[in-house]
Length: 116
Image (cartoon, rainbow, N blue to C red; front, side, top):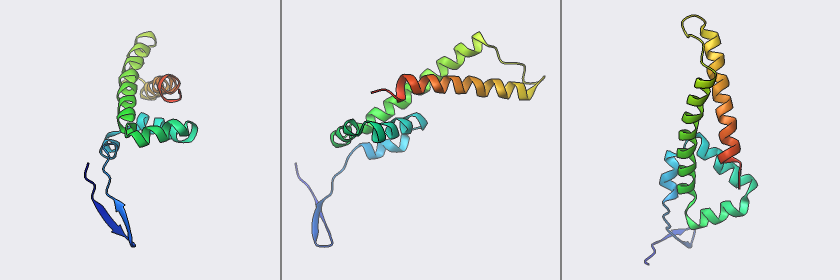
């Protein structure tokens, strides 16, 4: 393996590349929530994933799975508790949609984000 070095204030520092940097550009809300949880509550696991350069892949996977799970939960909630007609009472529709999203988010946080 060949390393390139750059001179910073008289010190030669290796120019390291890691794939997680590019992956971090594509991470969404749930990926960042997972990252913050790992960084603040599971420091050892976070550091190991950072050093092994698997953090970006993990966060992308969590984000993808969480979004898919959110869609499934929202469809199930809409079946069990149908939304009111948007044309008749717009504010009731907005309240119901917000309530469904809050329920889905709480379930995702408990199932995927805040677990070891």
